Length: 123
Image 1 (cartoon, one colour):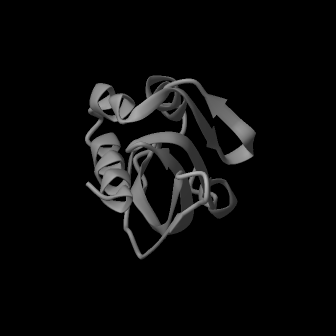
Image 2 (tube, one colour):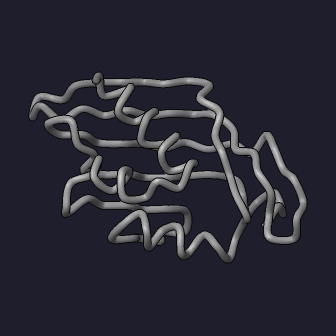
Image 3 (cartoon, rainbow, N blue to C red):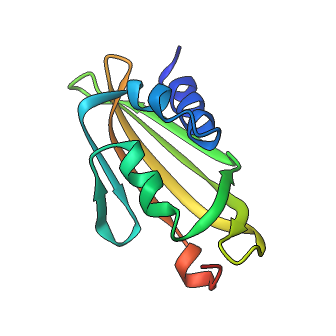
C-alpha cells in the first residue's frame, strides 16, 4: 500500500473502532498528539479520552498531500470535515480538521490532529 492508502485505511479502521488493527499500523513508540497538545501513547488511550467528547465521529477526505523526505520518511496530510454525534445526542457536520501523519517503512510514527470541534460549540 502507498502511504496515502495506509493513512486512509488507518482512519477508516479507527472510525470502525478496530483499535488493535489501527494500533498495529503504528510503531511502538509512535507520537499521537491531539488538539490542546493532548498526547496519547496508544489509540486505546485516545478513544478512552474521546468518550467524554462525542458518541462518534467520522471524516471526509477533501484534500490529501504526500511527500517523501530525504530521511525516507513520508508525510501525509489530510484536510476535510468531521461529522458525527456529540454526547448530548446532537448531530454535527462540516467541522474542519487537519491530520498530519509521518510514516517510516509503512508504519505510522507520528499522528498530529487539529480541528475546530471546541471552537464551534459542538462539544
